[in-house]
Length: 232
Image (tube, rainbow, N blue to C red; front, side, top):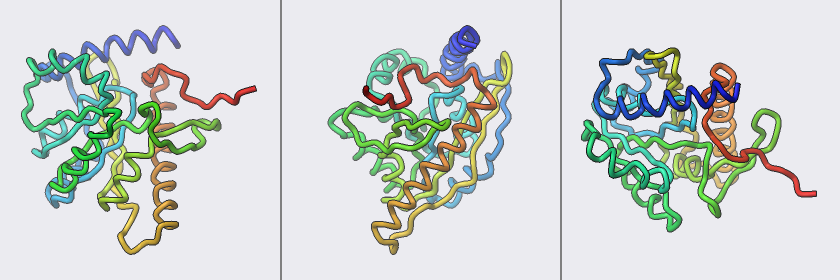
């Protein structure tokens, strides 16, 4: 299983560069839940798409191209710096903006601006910057930390949230999944109910993540100690 995981990860990395370079004719795609994002775009509500380090999220750009909406992809600054110079020379889409997560939290302002402009923001919910605020929840029956930022922002801006995953089915075929968008918080709710909404959103995200990890067990590429280890 470890060998398969590394092998598929290598394939996904190569596919990622090929897709970003515009060689989409080499791949085929299924888009399950596409209508949800089409409605999000046509109704100009903006939205938050929460994914994970699973499968190959870059194929989402193929869907977002089809619905003709601007998307902001949030990624860790270290990941952004490693690929920025290369991708800037081959990126063929002009409706994609990359927002790097920085320790000075400047990315929060860029994300907020995107929501104010009713744009779509894509972010992973299974990794966080050291020192940032986190939420603890049960993940495969063991406690793990998740970044609180995406969930708090969704309630602050009162925007619809969809959980999206793009999974490799075979050598050249991908399957994109998008859940029906849900608005978890309304301005009239008090602080306690807002916290409950955030917790419900996190639990829904975890349920979706567990579902697709079980379905595609060799395609979760989060290589660090994810679960909380109790100190002796």
